[in-house]
Length: 376
Image 1 (tube, rainbow, N blue to C red):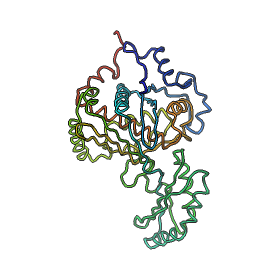
Image 2: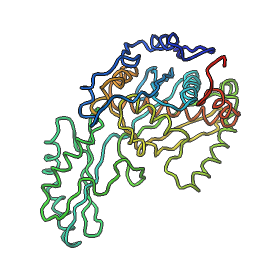
Image 3: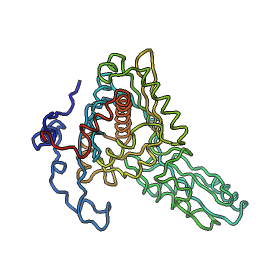
Image 4: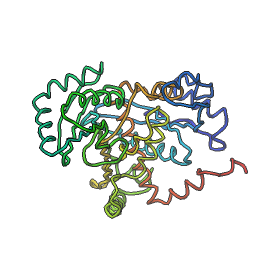
């Protein structure tokens, strides 16, 4: 089984231990180590540039995946929240020793809901019929705007006198929102008789929603034997399942669309590290965790039907993000999404266990913010 990153129990923040962990990663990481990034690399990503924000970057390993993608990964996190990476580290180690995490991509497509206003319901309905009659031509129009995007769905619904289209595209290894928006603009330009036309009319962009999923639908699952639960997490499957039943009651009362524990923590840190658009955390955390007692073993799964990930485009191949992408080694956006989902499942398993064993408060006291250096 692959090892975990080295650490120094006396002082884990010296230049020497940082260098050891960079060697553990097995990649050249000059920008992560401190070499300045050329400002020209930020062209297209920022305006009014004055420099770079320095966010601490750490790693956890090994993430062992099975299923649609199989391999062992080192995962980078950019965060200022003490104890978070340590939580993921323990979760990754336990799930790896349990045989790994199985991941599956159930769907892959980015959708948009442009909205066109008409003078009456009758005119909106006539436009909808025109869309149906000319669907093949509209699909060709959309696909002519991109070299890689392919339309997977073109549908419609009425909202009073407004026609809401649904255009979904497979965007390859890019996130693809600009690709999709350009295609959407070309489609709505062809529709006759419209008044106001909004590319993001029924706007789900960077908002949590359960109306319709978009992005990558990834499910991750793992089984942790009873003996490993007792030895490493100091809990039982029955206790974990009971905790999760309580959480579900609380989530139902809250009305939240995030039925997991710390997915926003880990996902935002991995997004920053790998150059994703961090605001898509708002959509991606519409997740559902499940913790079940299977005859003493723990069955854990995380269902993420709205997960966004990219390995090309945007900021994903610039500066430290390029090095973090190389460190992970995902060859496609689907593989990177599976790395995200598997890591998040491991972190939620560990955090749930820490709530039961009293480790949550203790770890924050020991590792959290504003703690004095070792020896003081």
